Image (cartoon, helix red, strand yellow):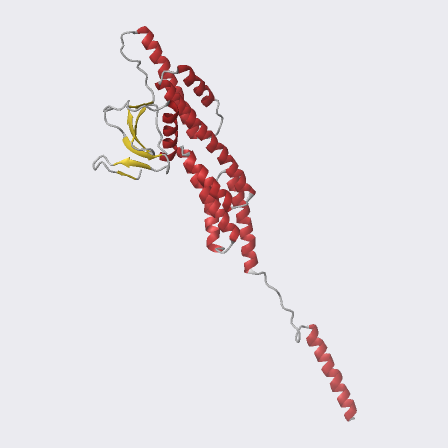
Length: 294
């Protein structure tokens, strides 16, 4: 009888254990919830992909915005940080190109190239590089036109203008330079016509940018100084700007800039000193006569 009870108890116990096991009473399987870190990685990957697309399209402000927002959430993500650094440098390049400063644009392009290995960044760099080269060429040709018109080398000025007008680049500053050059050439044509019709006029009547000096400079030296000064200063000169150069030392030139179309054309719009070795441009304070930053 006792044996029977023990056997029944054992069977009962085994039955209960089986039921509990089937219901998960003794062994519970851990459910692995979706990791929040995995979610963040997926989000960051999506943001990076979108940012690269925006960079390729040239929408740098939009790319900067979404990368900056993502950086707050994934501050240690290397790809986000590198891409944001590249966008910041490309933005400086874009601004320099808009201002007509090809030297700054080229310097920042070198930094941007070293900050990222993204194909989209490389594509944008290539586009900006082409624009910077064409801007530099446009500035050089424009200065050549100025010098030749000032020296009455009309044929050389016309050739330079034809080459300038043939530049095909999607950059507003180059378009502006081409328009200024066309205005210079139109002023020369009008001056020539006026001179032919009125021999006693006493002047050519040419309304153009001119460069002059009381010292003896070669055309090449004057052109080089103006080109480098323009690039280093980032100043947007128009067709009514006149320059007068004075050599202060072996490396420093003083450049008086004035607008000959202004009501009081005797007052220069600025007096600058330009160091051809360091590239530093300083503007004179008209009240103190001292030179400082632009």
